[in-house]
Length: 454
Image (cartoon, rainbow, N blue to C red; front, side, top):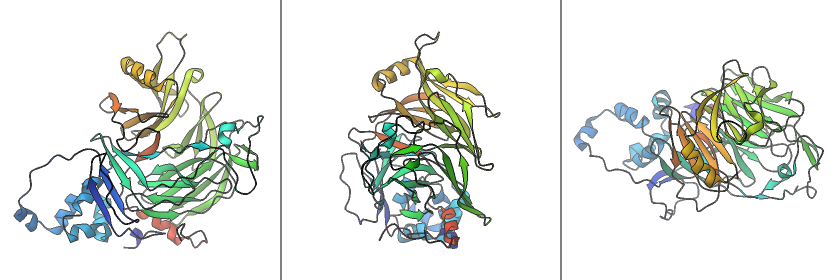
């Protein structure tokens, strides 16, 4: 079945699910092996009579297996040869795409240390003090770090899983995530190389290189079952020593045969100061934070235009983040102003359908906030959201608070047992056993269709 062919590498030859404790050592597996390890022990369930299983039609069995969460599916593949081969069966993958439901999880990576950025071509880069779009910390680079694993958090079971996959080429960092695909972007200053990665399958699909040279731009990714949209904004290199937030480049391809390969550019609003990072997507638009003072930058994909939306209580916010929860754009931030008639708190605001006003929808319970503020100690925090869940990760430590918007429950998230200290950064992640949309890139007869891996 053509749509399930990968662009750069075929599905990896061996995939397994391993039950392990946090202290257990990894099994010796081939370098191109994707594995799961979980920190939560599985409850033993009663066995179904084997005579019943043996008489069930294969089609019915396959349908049952499509509803398994990914860790359970990979464990089930060890039952027999037929189940092992399901990952390569076109008929099973087609059934999976038709019947599987969304599972809102999170994927986290080790946060890479910040070191002085050195241009490989000519010496060190320093920012200009009078540049509205640059600052000393944004002219810093990240040390080379080889990614070969991530940490998957399942908020339904409150369990962590260690996900190993074939080594990512060095010099790339995860920048955004959508529909089971992670977008990796090159760290080297200049035109940006990007590829899409399915960590469950270990496949890499390369994208065209951007046209304009940039340092650390903000990346927006939106993937559906038949289209891919990418926006790369800001950190334009105006010289080897300075950056400004000037332009946006966009990429689009869909199943209808229409594509635009970085051919659409758009100017950013004047005097904007967006920090390098990923964007939130909601209802056909990308959103990112603007600083000094705080506001929200909105990019409409269809009209290729930007505008600013005023943030609520913008003079009193700290560590604001934008996330999508239940198909709504949510702003999460701490309110730090002792002169207000309300205590300091962490709040959630929802952008209204008009696109210009906000309504406060939730506030962290005061007792929990006092604990949170004591642990966080003013270091700041980052937020990620997916489905009904929002995770507030404290910077510089392996601690977080999770909020369930449907059940209105706040609580401490169990720390990742596979990390000894340090900081995690992550994205909302929907595990996918198949992402046929990447096959659309096969039809682009362009020189960029080559593998990163020799």
